[in-house]
Image (cartoon, rainbow, N blue to C red; front, side, top):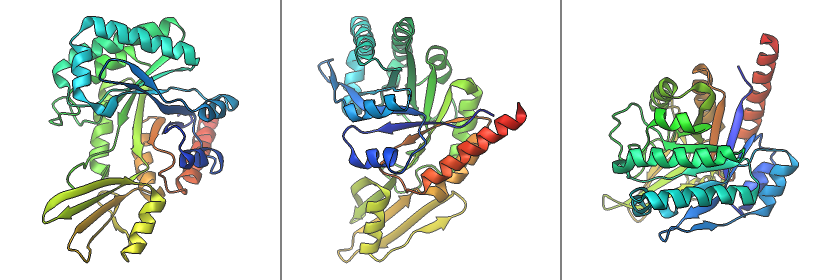
Amino acid sequence: MAPLAIWAWVLPHDLHGRRALQRLRAPVTHLSPVWLHLDPTGQVRQDRDLWLLAYARARRLPVFPLVANAGFDPAIMADLLTSPAAREQTAAHLAAVADALAVTGLNLDFEGPFGAYRDQYTDFVADLARRLHAAGRQLSVDVVAKTGPDDPNPLAQPYDYAALAQHCDALIVMGYDYSLDRPGPLAPLGWLEAVITYARRTVPPAKLVIGLPLYSRHWVHCTGHLAQRTDRGYRPLRRLLRLFGQSLRWDAATACLWAEWTDAEGHRHTVYAEDSRTLAPKLGLVQAAGLSQIALWRPGLEDPAVWPLLRRERRRARLAAAAAS
């Protein structure tokens, strides 16, 4: 098996993310800074972080700036995908941005319930990939996880895995966000296994990257209704739990950590957390499927113990590959 490749999305100007990369020695092999946003006017807005560029170049890391539709607004996608001229103009502009930044390629992260334009999205990806490849650059594409071709999740319907994989260099399946508005695990093990199995059937293994969560999620219900949903980093979550005198419990069936309590005002709190203990079995699923690439959302939110775990896994994979050669 090839050594473990670790893609990481990093926010610009995020001191916690920088700390993970530099002081905690995160063993990242591919960097995807969250820099580019397609806005409602069709313009691509940039929020570059020169520190991240310098960090990556000093370590000779491939850099794939993330491109998102601002706010994951489906109206932006409708305007783009229903207009052949807009698709062509945007693809040309993004390729020019990649040239100007002198990066390895782009990471396309267009999300939202735009399944009605599934074929047009594939056409757009094909055009952008062609332009990037002509300049010696690459394209990775993020897709919402699904367990089969007829997955009912409207956020997963825009993505034809097999067709997209024909054009891009890497297809990153975001193996998280199983639970959004209803409290629950972010990536329960049985669901993640089904996601990997389906992706493995439809995408060439060399192109398949499995996204894994480093964040935790906190829901607050008031009078039975969702009042707040917050993604939290590991350290802020630990502070929250200490504040309320709570501790995390282990659910062996889903390989998840969770807590639930009611505060003095009668608000119901539910937390599902990710740390090194929950990451280990997810890595096991990836490796059992014969895959060697993961992506992490995102450094700066993690339990610091995930980095020694990932360094050990990379060493183990290197030794196994050397022994097999």
